[in-house]
Image (cartoon, rainbow, N blue to C red):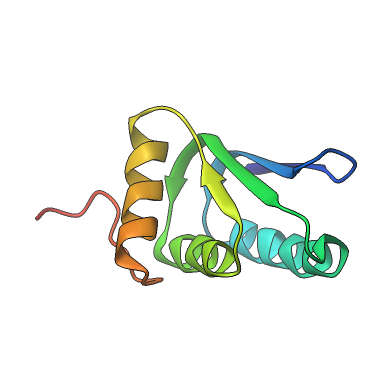
Length: 101
């Protein structure tokens, strides 16, 4: 399950994700991202990942796409920080979070 909380009336616009970003929930976030892109225009959008506990490969690709579109990924905790760092540093939607190196 994934909870998506959108705060459209704040500056910056904020999207809070909590739970598991996988399977059908990736499609739900993609649908919401499509809607938010039209509202966003030149506004800054922050995606808060502190409450995310798991992200599958499709979810990582979507987060990388959101990041590539100029949104800020933020979060605390080891998982969120590792996920964000790998997306930011790789520039690739194929960032492997938690994979052995």
